[in-house]
Length: 241
Image 1 (cartoon, helix red, strand yellow):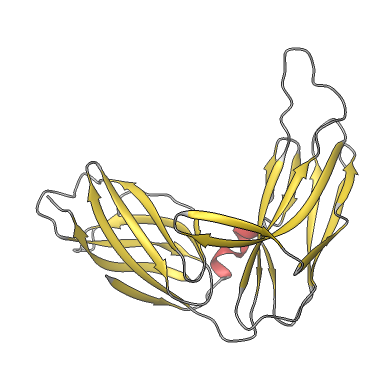
Image 2 (cartoon, rainbow, N blue to C red):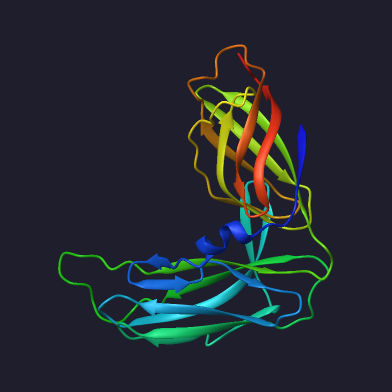
């Protein structure tokens, strides 16, 4: 197992975070919310790009990770205003997301759920109108200094390589790209993943076995990008043929 210490370098993902999320006719910006330890609120803007009014509900849930699953629970830490409203076609609604409690010592994670409430005009004949759901990550920074510490493992499994990443630090990490590369520094195999790993959690990502990974190769490099900096870790390959 290899441990890689990553410092907090979020600028590389600032532009991506500013891009709108869309589900059918409703767009949200930004696609991620961060409340600093010395701040109380953030703003989420919703825009109805459809041609019919949309009744919307917004709520915040506590977000944790256990095993391979994301878990959500009601919380009084965060409140949103307004929590329910109707968006006319082409209209915008500013939703303020408030931290109600004192800044925690360590980072806390939440997700803001934006749901369309069923009802309103019927769908056109021969069509089905699906409810909208957008899920926006929300991170409340802690008052203590935070860093990301990642442990990596690689396991060969037939035509796939399972990459396990454990976050031993006290801040989340957002991995935007993950790929395998040989130890000699050759270009990595193609690989695209988007995964959040919360403090104390572990995630496993399955990558296709690259063509250059011949039988007998016992170690590889895991390379990629994250909001905490570049990833480049040498790991032993378990289960190698």
